[in-house]
Image (cartoon, rainbow, N blue to C red; front, side, top):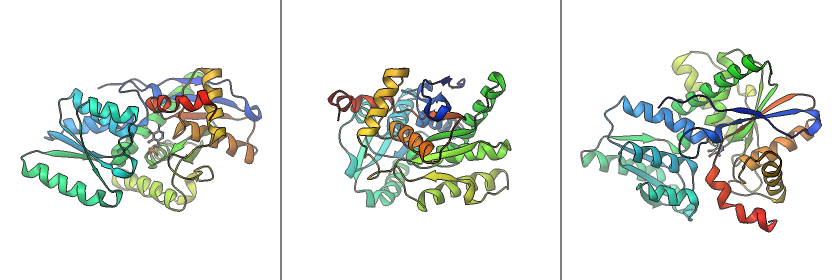
Length: 312
Ligand SMILES: *Cc1c(COP(=O)(O)O)cnc(C)c1O
């Protein structure tokens, strides 16, 4: 698959006289888009170079990651196996799509995930398969590469438009997106501030994971290193952790939909966008060019549509 870059557009938001732009990775050209689609595309390019004949991954049945992996695997006629934590196994649009694509989903307690993955891999090998394992959320150097590519697209946009972004904000989960952006900044010797708004993880753990991803990518390919002070992961807006949200987030989602016609969701992008606005107010950031990366998750918007109508 050979994809062109995703669009960047100006928003109507004008908080503190900043100018806001959005990179529409939710429009990435496969399986409802999003950062998992951007990462998955590279994983499947890698699979093509191997003799793998099936895919195994991990994630909640509601995750964007599992939907996209199941979709691309189906398109390539590769059997797809998903290990899913039983704790988050409710039915969502994503889980319905995963089933539609014919993936085989096996549930287990989150504490057993590691051992079940190991078991499943050896089971598949014993059956004569050559499985390719993709980490949950598309974590790892290939996922990092995907957002290094996105960073290059952002620089290309800057050269073409004459706009220079002072800040990049985005929602941070497993930290892979942020790692790729940080690597992009380092490689290009750029000075944008990259601010990840954590939707679940707290520090110091969240920052540590990003540090390790960046370090793993750079040590393997560039032999350059970074200090963890260069990583800004804001954990002030995680509320009660993954999946939790409040009225303010719903109202941010409604405003974005009404004013710019762009869907956000309460788990990732709505939470991140709300967190960004709070961060900008708290830190008195004004008169800057600010880019928010819409990391996608369109199906999640529909899962939470009722809350928008009901005023939550
Ligand atoms: C997974 C996800 C994120 C978080 O990305 P990471 O690379 O895991 O940090 C953000 N937004 C959406 C919509 C996601 O699905």
